[in-house]
Length: 220
Ligand SMILES: [Mg+2]
Image 1: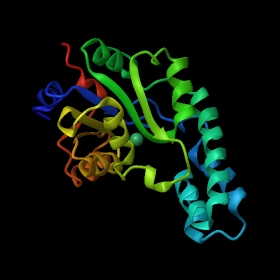
Image 2: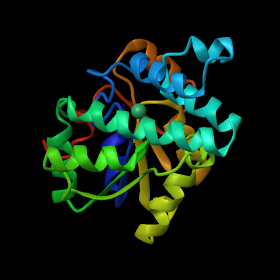
Image 3: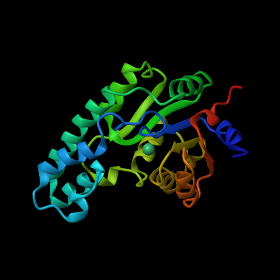
């Protein structure tokens, strides 16, 4: 989209979603498998839609509705499984180069993600990105209020950086990223790698829409 590089150039702080832009978290350890392992912790009387879901976050949400103990147990196990999942995968194509380029150009890069802080940290360290990423603002508890589409993680990142919303941009591949950014008063760039994603992300009106992370490289 025309103008996306200009939008980026006006900013100082890049907030980057993890699952999607940086890597495909459940590429090797499928999300269905992870969801099923979590279901065992809160089963066997699951609501049909939770029992059928392949999304671990649906199970976490259900566990939260069961009470703080269930929520804590499921969140900790999800965190462990995310750690296992990211140990099996590589960064998305172009992600390392793009993050390194942004850092070299003077942007701060913060990962803003519903995935576990620990899993993200170990992935970044393993792939030599820990130095380029200034902060990780990600899931550290079972509190659903913390997670996107709520703006909490973005607001925490801004506070830690001493930044105002106008200095920041959130880049992510889901509607929750765009909605969280909007709720925090931050510009959003949606990353849509398929026509279907493009349609669904366009419907939440991000400030810009791109087809690849490489479209956000300012050099060249
Ligand atoms: Mg994502």
